[in-house]
Image 1: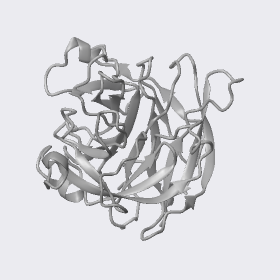
Image 2 (image 1 turned 30 degrees about the horizontal axis):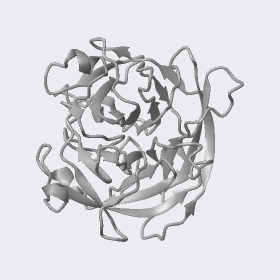
Image 3 (image 1 turned 135 degrees about the vertical axis):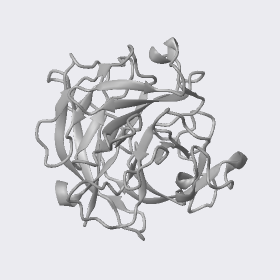
Image 4 (image 1 turned 45 degrees about the horizontal axis):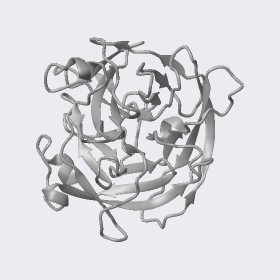
Amino acid sequence: MALYGYTIGDVDVNPNLAGEQFEVYRFLIPVPPVAPAIISSQLVGTVTVSAALASNPDLEGLGTSYTSGRVSAVNEPGTNPTTIRVGPVDAPFGTPITVTPTRTSNVDRYGDETGADFGRDFSITTSNTQALYALGADSTPGAVGTSVYRISIATPGTIRLLDTATPTAAELAGTTPTNPGRYADGLAIDNLTQGRYRALASDFTTVDGDLAQLHKVDLLTGQLSAPIQLIDSNTNLPLSVNYDSGLAFTRVPFPGNTDTSAQRLIALLENGFLYEITGYQDELSASGLSLGSATGTNGAGSATATLIGVVNLPNALSGVADYEGFAITNETVNG
């Protein structure tokens, strides 16, 4: 039973065509224990985003549906906060459908980065309704922060800002984050053990004045927890890398999936570096947004990050192309 990662480059590979063309890549997720090595990637297909739908699109948010096992993408907010959802973008690759979810209360997404994943809609208490969650994050000095949005999976669906109270006009306009000072651009939701707080966001950058860390996410109010410090397994010191990231769990319990392996948490950095994160279980299982341990910086939680490989993606190491979106699928459906 093999697991595959998916990511999308942020470079228009054919500027001569209308819109923008983004390449989708697929690669094998190594099985531990494994020494870090170069991981080959396979071009799956090219996604075209019409200029009429979004200016300067960048499909940074990737998530795997727990009802179909297929991957969908969400664009970063950027200068045009119009949200687009594109899918499926995994194998077997066809012609992905692009939709523009209807804004709720005139909401514009915050920030210039994004992360996404599928999870249960916790605003509905009587059913297991699936939704697509997306982070909006801003790394601009003086405006660092994160907001969380929920996108319904109907066509075209609706997008709603999640907040603990009635959103302010600035929050709805996308000029103010609901989590000021806390930056995160990768999102992974644990659908193997569903729960309102069974989600983690990743931050491998130093834009908010700290090193690499995770945050628990409240899928009802969009709040981010205090930081969970990531410790480098090689040095036993806080991990310092300063790259944008994508985050994904390995177990997606869609119908027909016979995978019974242990749950794993994997992060892909924009330069192709692949990390496995362990020791997060205590934090994720703690009640609410509290953390299960106090071994990290300033009493926050901690987890361990281990480099398990470097994915060979075109122009990634040079920085010409970035690969920030990340999702994992199971070969039984998408092999």
